[in-house]
Amino acid sequence: MKKNDKKITYANSGVDISAGNLAVDLIKKNVHKTFKYFPGKVLTKIGSFGGVAELKGGKIVASSTDGVGTKLVLACLMNKHDTIGIDLVAMSVNDLAVIGVMPAIFLDYIAMGKQLPKRTEKIVNGIIKGCHDCECALMGGEMAEMPDVYTEEEYDLAGFATGFAESKKDLILGENIKPGMKVYGFASSGVHSNGYSLVRKIFGINFKDRTRAKKILNSKFSGLSKPLGEELLTPTKIYIKIIKKLISLYKIEGFAHITGGGLVENPPRILPKGCAIKIKKDSWKRPAIFDLIQKTGNVSDYEMLRTFNCGIGLIAVSKEKIKEGILIGEIIKGNGEVIFE
Figure 1: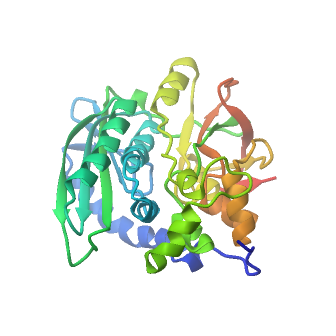
Figure 2 (figure 1 turned 60 degrees about the horizontal axis):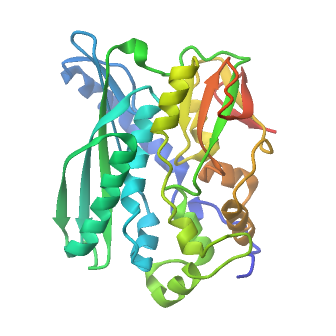
């Protein structure tokens, strides 16, 4: 496949992060007005990794919701549905764990053009595996047949996680982060579940030409140990166990799950006023899949960092030395930005 001469961005592949940020800004004020109905105190605002509230009596409840995006297109084209449920669980439970709340309950929603029981079994078995990995109960869900919205081949997924903590002391919200603290990174398992609209545009993977798309997905590319489709369907890493371990061993001041918005948009979500993050781009080895995406699509360094995790799926901030992580940067004085060097 030839390299494109024109640089490709996430926005011109159909996903505009800036527009998404604006949409959040537009709804924040009215959403926050609903917090008065909660029987306690809501502790976070829209835009945090999860919604956190304090119940009367001091106990904490937190929730998070997410999907897996257009990674589903690949699952459908390859007729491989046994791991996409792991992605669904990971995207929500990781967002809970980074605020210091471990998931206890998970719910799923599956919308499809046609109910295919064997396929549904594979999807749900993936969700169950994800729940086992994070020690979370799959309490229920919903299956909706929507033939005028999806084709028989298509489906969509949404996940909802809830967790509990004893008190606000258990929360890790980043308010104590200070300049001089170190930033540690933890490896991703690959592309995870963000940036697939850009990936599909670069490689020409869509439902319009299924034959061509399947050929590309089954092709081997230099640097990859398996066909492109298998590489791209590698499940999102669930970080619950490593987060629990880190909390037990160190004083962690902040975690960030690197999802949509990549290393540009996610770290600032945990920064207090007066702080910024400086990250050394060459401090970790970037997996070959990201090199292939960048080269094939002629994607700029900034666009890669703003769209993908680029090999770092989780960051932790601490003044202690964390031997389990990779030292990728430090906290400096600033206004919430990420500086790459």
